[in-house]
Length: 243
Image 1: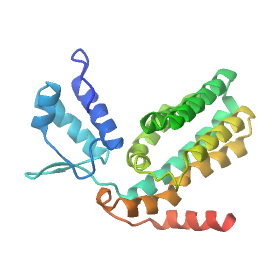
Image 2: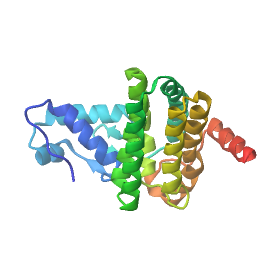
Image 3: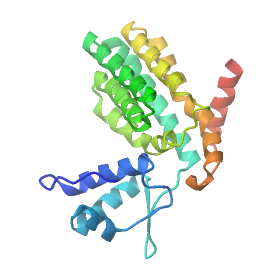
């Protein structure tokens, strides 16, 4: 279930990334108990790097460490997902506008290639690859702008959002729609149309606002709340009134 550790490299960062992927991809379920002892035995490492990885995962909002009671995969918070999406929209809409100014031909080819890979994954019903290509697409746009701080902030905001994507209902957010949105974003970058690029990115990132309440209702055991923050509700109402 979990990837192997390279003993020649620092252990704690590898544990963090491996466990993060397992949590985000729902291989470790919300509410599931984890123990330092079990993880250290599974990987063949001491408990100290496991403890360090658990602390980082707790800081990332993915684990809940309860003193004297154990460590658990944290359940998903609807409010935190909506708030994280709010942060992503602010940053990624700015990134895509700058990408539309500075992207070269190689950058555009790279984006189209990632969309093609994502489409192939969807055709093969490979949801893990589909989502990993989605991650790579958004990272590639940030890479065009070469703003590492913005990219790290976005990746931190994705922790909760990414878990929801693995629970996503196909009838709520069809994969072909997401793929086409990525093509539209890439086309606007290629055309150096900053305003259209921003619009396309905003439309894409707001998809989750419509899917989130339905996904939470369909998977109540995975969520710790069902509350949408006021700003997210206002965005949904505004978007619906514009349709």
